[in-house]
Length: 348
Image (cartoon, one colour):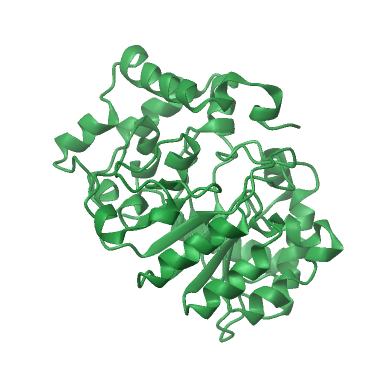
């Protein structure tokens, strides 16, 4: 399976995606646009609060080509953050007291400067969080020591596991992914991750395999903990339930499966003002692989830069960025439906 970009798919174009999103909501379903919904809840424009997370996409290269990937990541994606851009990120961090650096991809570990970057961020006394797809740990011998590396630097590991069974996981992420994920989780557990009292945090991420909203996060966490411990002897800290956002390959899935209109209507009708008030873009600054600045990872994939004169990490200015209005569009309904959704799970 190739990325949308590699196949020349029209949905690889961010402008086309935005056109499709607006057309379905406003013209076909005759539903309010997202900014109108915010205005009705007295939340427009959305404004940032003090930044708590600098989320950095260090590249779109990945060892997997997942069916629902909003990044359209894969082995054929060559976009990789350079060490120079990483240094700009470090310089920006040194100007602020942002406590958490959230490293994502693709598979962030595939960036050749990944380990150097983790070490340098750690030297600044910030918490490092890595979004690990698990299979990268067992994909090649050079990655087998990642659990020890993570432990050495106190990295918080956040790993996607669509379900606690092989059929649903492999259907979304590819044949054999569940088995490799279980193997990687056992390697993380073996060095202390997820173990009570270890201080080594291992959180899992659940996202639905189809065109529906996730169930209650607490109930899902209890199910995952019970089954993974019983069947595989695996332990972890928390489960984050995340709504699939209609962007890139998940948008393609919705259209191809005939679920697009129904899913968008479901998101719009489930709009929750409390979730909208707590969206992650308010306390997060997102950095693209090329250093571009965005309000969130999803805006990044749609090329929706921050509404600020400061649009690249080399020009980072916390005061200027604090004055911006957050850029929104129709995909934002995914983060505000029901209990809400963020990179850390539900928000309301």
